[in-house]
Length: 214
Image (cartoon, rainbow, N blue to C red; front, side, top):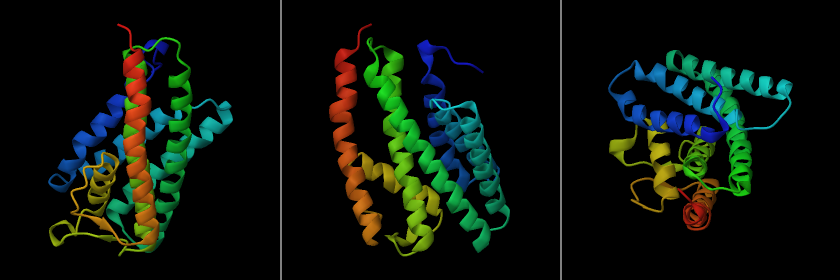
């Protein structure tokens, strides 16, 4: 479905919100484990659609995103080293898609001559995608070092949800301290995320809201 230029960031924001709504239910309803990868796939596809590349390149991106969905579904049934390695490779590609999308949306948003509600939604999408991007980077680190993060005993399972929680707690600089990085790469990444979490709303979103005209 083609989204009009007037609401070009709305679909992406909707998928991001749906992704967050269904995550907590995955621990209690097994069927959600199948819906969650699909929700993330739609989020990635919507993010890819913000990019300006030749159609051939975009189709390759679609293929890799579909491969990422497939590996996530395979891991639900069979979590062996090979499937997890493939999942990490596709997670790396997802990270690249998010970096490209964040860059593309940032350029578009800050080149807008008129700041309306949709442009502000674009800024919100960037902020949320930053948290998801760092979550994916933490997943890569965790794959190579399962002791990279110190989880409390009550949170020793559901690693993905816990890493997503840690990412957004760090991004928003809430800092509960329930999960802490002990790996040096994870520590440096969390510092960078905290800096982004402070600077982006203070500079970008505040500027957009200040320029907003009804």
